[in-house]
Image (cartoon, rainbow, N blue to C red; front, side, top):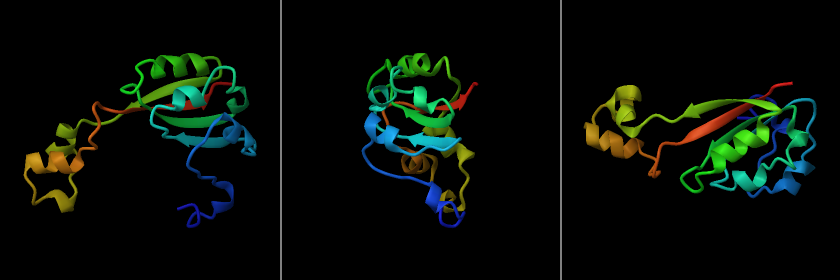
Length: 134
């Protein structure tokens, strides 16, 4: 996708990322960080280490089912520098009831559509979209 949009030279992807890896990325004036780290977000984004992200937008998947304190910890961590918009996932029942009306699903019954659209998560997911507030 980055190649199609002629921005591949500005996109960095990777697997494991700790705070040192994040700090080594040569951010310019503005950046977007997309994080899905299965509960590690509480260790990755800490109050003492995120000051260098003050100009970055962040989209962080929140895994409160792994550690219920992740949301509150991240809210506190970014409260002085970012505004937080919470994006919540759609329940599998709503998806199956034609919220996701894809042609490929038309031949399936409601229970099969629910199984097909389920992520197998123990709870509904949410993401924090953080925008710099300065």
